[in-house]
Length: 329
Ligand SMILES: Cc1cc2nc3c(=O)[nH]c(=O)nc-3n(C[C@H](O)[C@H](O)[C@H](O)COP(=O)(O)O)c2cc1C
Image (cartoon, rainbow, N blue to C red; front, side):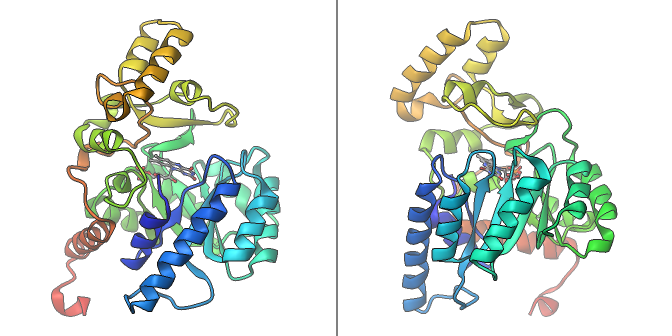
């Protein structure tokens, strides 16, 4: 859902936008090319987008279990994104080391960000050969794929990971359930250097998302009952092969309700495929399509441009920390 327009808009507003992984790794090069051309036209019109270096001021994400390393490395070498985000290795720390080494060889100035969801994974990073430049600590509230069974809420997970990595000097970024300045301020208090927001940007003007999906993110509330982690939607979409430690959080709809009631998968899949033809009407409480989103959906009330999301979150954080107008300048 995070394509070039959203990633560049986030970086332009002073955040760091990451392109999401593609279903096929080779499509990432096309996204990077489009992002580069957006950045170049912003620079030509002297709109602020920083920093002005040979590195592209956005990051790019890869899912290690499915992405092709050689294809990824050649795109990184060509476009030099300022950061690469690695997640979900099938082969654990060994795979993270291999990817990190190859990315650094191809583009030495590109930072390596690694997303983890357990204390054991965090400790594994310390035993790795290649240390990351940043660690994203993903709590159980997060939308999309996260730990299927051993996920922990961010408020307990982050400080424990911070203690475990205390000597490493690696900055931590908090992910999971942060959708406004209150969550962001709380995460900074827990020991994070910064925050990651995924679900909030599903409701950004620039997101690469169907309107029906986006409207459902705005409509839904009470993530405890309206979201769950399930592989059902992956399977109906034909996505198989995620390592068994992971399962995606999604807003539930008729597919999941009927699955719980015992309706056979083949019937659900048929109805899902029909719903695909219905376009935007395929989402919503009566819909059947995958609506991956996090537990904080109840905090998202409107579609806004990415720059406004970032400015609002920052304002709210500064207010909560009691930073006045004068100090801000
Ligand atoms: C629709 C969606 C797709 C996601 N896809 C990926 C992905 O491909 N790779 C990844 O590392 N994380 C992915 N994530 C998880 C994010 O990296 C992040 O952990 C999460 O969005 C943070 O929690 P939040 O959604 O509550 O903000 C996805 C999240 C969402 C909502």
